[in-house]
Image (cartoon, rainbow, N blue to C red; front, side, top):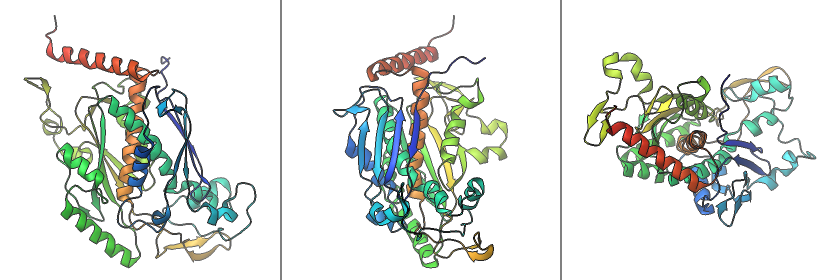
Length: 395
């Protein structure tokens, strides 16, 4: 029987895309963590970025309100409660009111290929697929982003950074950041690229898709720097760090594939090339390559953790695909809803948030919760023990 694993973080959300707003509860953050609301709102603003976003991003403000777990700008150790306001609630109140729906204008029965509409309708027997659309919408990732921003603040206090960059859109590729400054430039860019020429090329591809009325997918990378080695587990399948990170990224709407390190490419290499050799340098162990993406045997190995996620094109388009009207069982075009042409830059921000959540949770499981200063001390002692382990000869 497995020993009890200390609880890390737990995140619960509620709310619909066109409802009053989103509710997020984040449980497990330590006490004593300074929280800057403008910093959290800044992450939500980054999520709204990118050329090719839909009209909603022009009016959505993502006003954030703290409801609990924070007092005087500092966490108390209790669950943190957050709401993110939906700016267009008043114009949707007659359709989405929790108590009384006064209008049928939101009803739709023609599922969109690639979306949750049909499967969700079959699961629950809904005649109005809006009950699926509203919760399955990527709007809920605004709540994930807010929670992830808190996790990022916690990790930064431990010397752990989370970075993200767009790698491709619609077949056009962008340069991978090679330095921390380039990662930061990518995070500050509307298109998620550190290179201005790359950003211009990606914008041009999106502009062409907008003319055609189609959507585009792409890929993004997330990098974690400063994570101590040994976070995660080789003992149990559900505690392996790479499995948890991949699961979190796959949960993002439209993400259909995730790689760790060199991922798919490793399948075509010989074992003599695919592994990262272990050498001894002036400051201890040196890995000349990082094909494993910083994770070996389900645990961090001290190198940068590198992840890549691939997003399919958004299912909702101005030129809808063939579908079926479930009310009449007659052929019909899929439901049209206001939509993005491309959300890869936004997806990258959500990917950073989900990565921060998983890493913060794994860190708390390994080093324990409680007060921030206690955790800082435990992590510092662990880092020192690892340093001695790598630099001292065994007796």
